Image 1 (cartoon, rainbow, N blue to C red):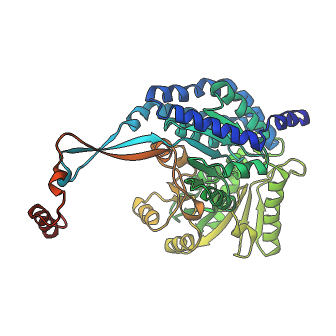
Image 2 (cartoon, helix red, strand yellow; image 1 turned 45 degrees about the horizontal axis):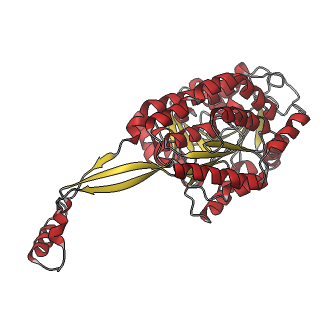
Image 3 (tube, one colour; image 1 turned 60 degrees about the vertical axis):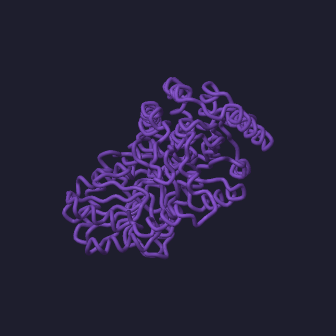
Amino acid sequence: MVANVAQMQERNPTLTDLERIFQAQKAAFIAHPMPGAEERINQIQRLKPALLSHQDAFVAAVSKDFGSRCPTETRIVEIASLLETIKYCCKNLTRWMQPQKRNVAVNLKPAKARVYYQPLGVVGIIVPWNYPYFLALDPAIAALAAGNRVMIKMSEYTPHAAEALRSMLAEVFPEDRVAVITGEADVGIAFSKLPFDHLLFTGSTAVGKHVMAAAAENLTPVTLELGGKSPVVIHESFPLETAAERISWGKCINAGQTCIAPDYALVHQSKVDEFASAFTRVVSQWYPSKRNNEDFTAVINERQLSRLKSYLSDAKDKGAKIVEINPAHENFEGSGKLPITLVFNTTEDMLIEQNEIFGPLLIIKSYDAIEDAIQYINERPRPLALYYFDFDMQRAEHLLTHTHSGGACINDTLNHVAVEDMPFGGVGPSGMGHYHGHEGFLTFSKAKSVLIKGKFSATKMLFPPWNRRIHRFLLNVAMKNPNS
C-alpha cells in the first residue's frame, strides 16, 4: 500500500502542471467552442463501458481509502447512479440544446427572439471524499453535456479512488477534454484560484467560504453544494416501524457520511421512546454485527473518527444520553468503525448541535405540536435536505411551504437526489446553485439572448428626432395601458 501511494504521489501534478492543463483546455475550447449534440453524446456514452469495465477496481480502491466500505453500496449509489445519469442526459441533450423561442414586443416586430445555449469553457469540479466517483462524474457529465472542458480535483482523503478515476478517464478522454487532478491541500487551494469559467464545489460550509472567496478574485461563478443539519420530522400519526426503516436507510448508508443524511429527528413527545426502540430494532436486524461486517462502512479516517468521538464525549459530559446500537457488544477499537448511535437530551452548547454530524450519529428531539417543529427548523440555518413523514398531504404541503431547504422527501430519505429530472442544490448556508439533469446543463451553459431582424425594421419609426407624433402616440398607449 505504501508503494502504491508513493506511485500516486509521483503522478500528482505540480502547480506548474495545473496551469499547463488549464491552458491546454482553454486553448482546446477556443479552437472548438461549440461541439454539436452528436459529439457531446458520443463523449458521454464513452463513460458507460469504461465504468462497467472499471467497476471492480473502483470498488476495491474506495474500500482501501475507507478501510472498509460496502461494495454493493458503492456499486448502487455511485456506479449504477452514474449509468442512469448517462442514459438520461443522452436521451434529452438534443432537445436541451435547441434554441428557445421567446416573445417579441410589438414595437420590435418584425423580429425573432431566441435564447442560445453556449458552453462556458473550462469547468472546475472540486470533489469531496464521501462519494468520490458520483460527485466527480455526475457534474462532469452535466458539464460535458453543455459542451465544456472539465478539470476534476479529487480529495486527498481518497488517493486510491482518485487514482482509479484518473486511470479510467485517461483511457476515455484526452487531457485537454477531461483531466483529474490529485494532490494535497496546496494543490486544492491553487485549483480554486484558477480562472475557471465555472467552479463547482461539494464539501463543508467552512471550506465552501474559502472556495467562494478564491473564485471571487477571478469573478468565477460558483455552484456550492454544502450540507448542514438535515432534519427529520415524524408526525405522531405515522407508523413508527415504517419511519424507522426509511430513516435508518438514510442514516446507515455510508455510515452516515452523506451530505443529505438525516442529522436529527423531531419526534412527537409521546412517541420518542417508541421510535427509538423501532429504530434500534431495525438497525440491529440489518447489522447484527458491525466490526467485521462489510455491509457496514467504516469512517473515512482517524481524523474524522476522532471528530465524531469528540462530539459524543462532549455531549455526554454536558448531560446528553448516549445509546449505542451494538447488539453483538463488539469492541470497535482499531476497526475504523463507529456504531450507529442515538443521542438524546442535547443542548445548544454541545458540539453535536453546533456542527453537521456527517457520521453514524443521530440526535433525537421531541416536539409538542408540528408548528413547534417548524419553528425549530426555521430558527436554524437552512439545511440541504428535509424529511417529513406523514400520509396527510395537506399537512405535508403546509410544512413544505413554511420551511426552507435545498430539497425534501415526503415519507422517505435521500432518494430525491436519485431523481435525475429534478435539480439538486442547497439554499443559504447549505449552498447555492443547482445541477443534475436539465439544471446541470443550464448551470454549465451561457444562455445568450439573440434578437434577429430582417430587411425591414419597425424600430426605424422610433429614430430621432424625439417627440415626433409616433413617439407621443406610443408613449400615450403605454401609459394608458401599463398592465396590458
